[in-house]
Length: 129
Image (cartoon, rainbow, N blue to C red; front, side):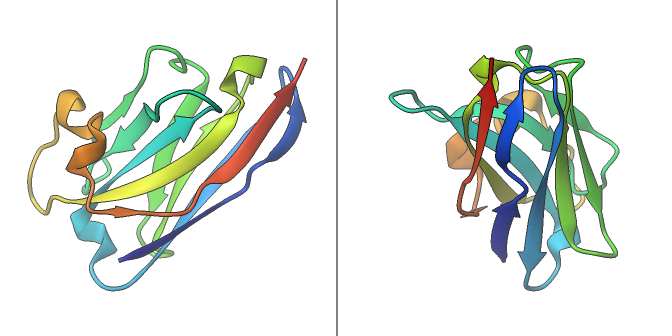
């Protein structure tokens, strides 16, 4: 599976952006998908994840109520809808895919970088105050 993240940009605080993660290759529907972000000088951190079935989602406490993760099986896409953006959301955002067909996912598992088998390149989100 190859992943390509897009949709980043410069936005004012309080604004919204939708990030997209396009997947190519077979059986993307068998993968759980996660979004992570990394700010300069900081470690990559978990943002959100969605199960292979799409019925289980997790978001980090720092974005709860503001970010929503979803996926479109017909288009082999995953999305991260971000609203009420804050300057501290500024980071490069990465999508990852974890092979997990038919299996439930735990938040703990999906929050681990090492759990993912594939990564896309980052897309930069900059939120101005």
